[in-house]
Length: 422
Ligand SMILES: Cc1ncc(COP(=O)(O)O)c(C=O)c1O
Image (cartoon, rainbow, N blue to C red; front, side, top):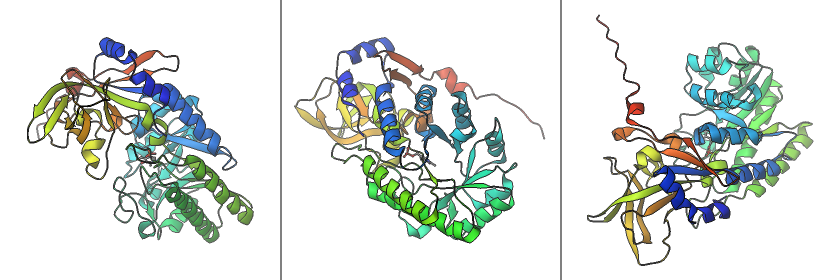
């Protein structure tokens, strides 16, 4: 899935300068129609995979309330990893069965928050959490870490090294302990890879989940309500990346669940927690060039820092974190090779390195593509840099500001002094 042709056309039309004049730069802008279209496509493809399909959108991918309202209207649930994310999901009306609480290294306060307002589906990340859940729910899920049985990638890490999940050796005991605490319904979750663009890898994950379900069922004589393949469906960040073959994944997953049903007389429901696939391509960071600088390399400085608007290029470089960059109104030469940088005092604060772009001047508008997921949500105030505003291009063509830019007062709001003499 890439940005839609309509959004691409809008971004290169005279509408963008009008929006810039009105709202100023920098901003992330999201394409409502594109998000809806992708969500509907996912629903259509996966609705036949099992008796019931449910997508739990990973709130961390884009925690803007207006985005979450769109997700709710699509009929999706929410994968939450913290108390504020639970708050956001509940704010848009998510009910207990529409929230998967997928935290890790969970505190007792988080378990309490998860249990409020009718609770949610608890997805436990460690066997040590079983005795710590204050009120054990009827339905419980565990995050499985296959260890040496699978390879991960640079974002999520090698499973053997990763901090996530219950190990293969612990998994039967985990369900047994949960059953002893009163659980009656069971789910199995995993997430072994992130931004994976090969659907065959994800199919292996579905196969692996069904194998573990089989193993635990045989040992403990329990049935599984659902398997949850997590997120991790990739998008083509680079122009020559191939798009993920989502219909092949749906087809193959259905085959696997049908085979399971033939053998066992039932099949678990199929859940996923996509974030990036749904919103990633439908966002763009719009920023203005404020300096062009000649050092040992040519640097183009823009009016927002990479760290305060989208950390991905800073933290995943050099293996990942690539975002395509274009220049508004310029697609012809002469070209030059430049690094597009922000203002933070960190050399990793670079949106793109050694990019061949049409010659850039001060005042030009730079578009950083695919910022609809894991961008604003990851941004930081490091260096006293303030996060930008977020806009939404609505389906009806209007543009709405859905989050204002941070101000100095926001940066200072947590300074409250309490003196203690001991
Ligand atoms: C538990 C869990 N589920 C889902 C996701 C969403 O991943 P993606 O946006 O790559 O689909 C993440 C992302 O890190 C995650 O940690």
